[in-house]
Structure formats: structure tokens, C-alpha cells
Length: 345
Image 1 (tube, rainbow, N blue to C red):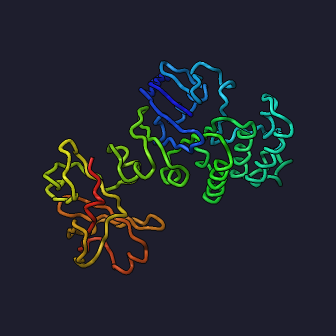
Image 2: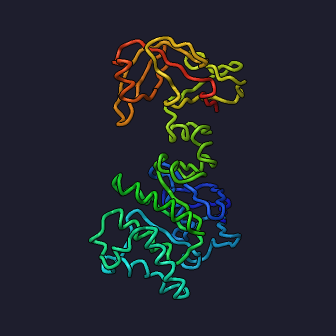
């Protein structure tokens, strides 16, 4: 559906380098990365809004690299909504129909479906100034989809919303995708957001795509220190290898498989680390004694730092577990984790 080949872009002191990416028909694909990574630049290149130094962009096998934006059959939704302030909700949504030859009955049917799916029928005659952030975003989505584009580009559509509105719009995005034939490409810096919406994603950093794959694969098997850190692998260590063991500052960690000599890092997700006050007997092949050095309230969970020799591990526990274990800084504890929880790369 969307195919990007050897794309290079230079904008002042920022470059996108050798971007190769394929997105399937009707897929909901996520482009992730921190602020300034190049996510929006790549999205705008697909839309035809930034100049390309070299490379090709195809949609449904058609080369659109040099086509003007209005000829690409692409709609784009920005995080600031970009609604016309002097037009009503109805007028904002139907504005794009003036530039597309769409049968009147078909347009009316599409409009009614969008009003229904996005639950905005009651807003029909309101001006944008009278809308909440979540309502504005739903109107912007309806305006983008009313013209039935082949591709819908979403530039961090949830980042400016309060938590309650964010969940509403996220659910609306899922429903819209299921009921639409369009391919969705959304950029975000929020990995948790990406997990809830897409099955596949790419991670970009400093204009270079670091990893492409299923969300589960990126989450559990990052292929670089940057991706590991981005997806929350907070236990990330440089290592050497000896058979099935990784050596981290003199600490021996069992991985359960022979380690490729070219691997130089190990990573363990904090939720895979079990913290206890006693040395529990279990099937977990990594078990160490340590000292609690820090307890950080993360809202629903507490992040616990435990120092084992010269290595500091991070684990996550609930408030109930914190109270039950009686954890405080400076007390001795044990940590355990499975060999299968150790990712080596």
C-alpha cells in the first residue's frame, strides 16, 4: 500500500537518511520516536508537504513522489486540529467535499456514518470555539475521512488531550479504522499509546529508522540500546558473554541459551523482576540478594531500585505489595527473574 524506498530529506540541519518502509493495505501503522526524531517530517514527506532530496514514495504501486499534495489521495490530521474558526462543525467537515467529485447520496451516507461513529451529531451547528479538545479532534477526524482517502496521516492526535478525552478519541480511532478502507499511519512519542492501537510499528531516532516489526517484537526484543530504552526496558546493561551466561560488572546472568558473541547488551523489563523479602524457591534461574536504594511512586505502581553488587536493577510492584513487603530504602531484599526474561542483543 505505502512503500518508501531509499528516502533522503535534508531540512536545514536535520536529515532523514535511507528510509525504507512498507505499510500494508488498511493497516493501522505507528511511527514512534522521541521529539525531534523526524516522525512528522517523514509523515509530511508522504503527504507531499516537504521537499525530497532522493528516493521514492509509492501508494498502491503508484509513484507519488513528485505529485502535488492534492493529487495524492491523502488526508492529514494534526494535533492542533486546524479547524476553520468561522465555520460550524458541519461546514468544517464538509469543506473538503468542494474539491472532490463525490456522489451527493454517497457523501450524505458517509457524513451520517461519521457523525454516528464519532458521536458528534449534537455538535453539528457549533463553532470550534465552543468545542472541547476531544470534540475538536473528533471533528478533525471526520473532516479528514469524509473525502474517503486512501491514506489517513495522524500527527500525534492524542498528545494535546486530557486523559479522559484521550481514551475517547483512541476508541474512536479504533472504530474508524475498523469501519474504513483507509490505511492509517500515526506518529507518536508515546509507546503505551502505540501498543493500544497498532499491531506493527517503526521506531525512528535522529532521522534513522532503528527497528520495524510487530509491537510485541519491538516491546520484547528491541534490537538497539535506543529502542530498548524507548520501550521501557529499564534494566539495560552492557555485557560480555560466556556460553549461556551474560556477565554484567562481574554479575553472572543466566539466559538459558547460547549467546551470540556479537551481542553486547542484556535487557530485562522491570515488570519481569520479582522482589521478595525472603529467598524464594522457584523455577527462576536468576536469584540475587541486594539492597533497596530507591522507591519511586509511579502512580499505579512503585518503581523499586535494588543494588546487587555493582549492578542496579529496577522492578515494579503495586502499592499493596509495597505495604505487604514492608519495603523501605536500605533494607535487604531478594530479586528473581526467569532466564527467558533476559533479552540479549
